[in-house]
Figure 1: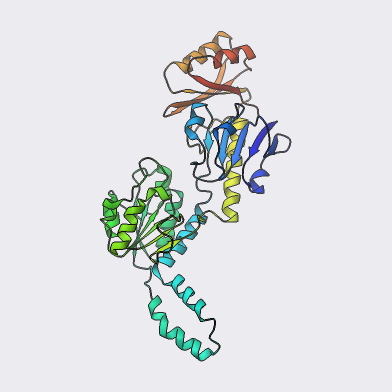
Figure 2: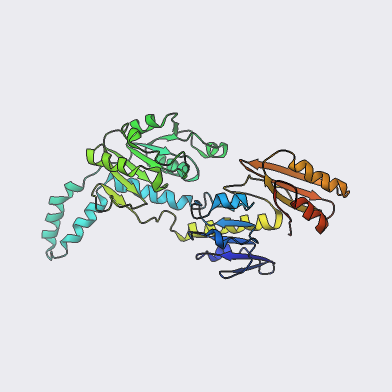
Length: 391
């Protein structure tokens, strides 16, 4: 039976994916086989030697010590795209908030509670409503920076609103390119996109290459009066550069899901309390995806949507499956296969892939290797761990 240690509240729709005949779930389990969490910041001491995998029911993995996990041969899974629709809908709301005086108008109406005469109320509304006048989104240009699962949905939504859409993503995957509407104009330079767009929406992962990407130099290319939306990560934006651009009036409004000191209280900033994925549907979808990925890894050895291991999926066979992770250096796989050959164990099927410093292998065998042979394989220089996959 596999033990799954849970952190945070995980949607029951995800937890229900684990059969009670094969899995034990709980928040106080010792020697778990896997950890399933959401926003809990995972301390390295919580990752016992028994842990084979970690899954986050969400997209980011900043709360997990990924480099340490890689060193120990532990794949870390996330749930990309499972909360994409929730974030897309909030971005759509942000576009409307950035184009019309909606919040300001609502706040004004709330000051009129002492008026008891309908005629006076009507006259007051008519006299002041012009100060909340905005502009329509139709015909304006939206620049989407990052065209993954969320960015592509945002682009589609903007198109249905009658906007022109430009996109920038130097790391656009083949799958993402297939999802993207041919009405989205691909831009080769970030500065060119910034200079032509009325609205700019950020949908980037937090990487060394994206930290502080939206800085003073980039914002210097802004179309005057542009509105910047950040539903990506706070670190993608240089806060001082945004404040300077707002103070100069170059940037008309900044709307973000990540409140920071220095932004609170500004009339040209709209702050939301990190609610992009806070819908029941998104929490359910993320939990289900994370649970299924853990199951597929524990029972079949397959890896999908790992942030530190290569994607590797091998169809089930009638034999015995061996899962091995090792340092991505030459000759290790040959040494392992030689040990199997010395014991006259035939290989039925095999897949091997690598990602940066780590390599991962699934080897299907006609019969199970003995415990001493498994120990020999684990002792090969560069092998991090090896296990028999138990369906």
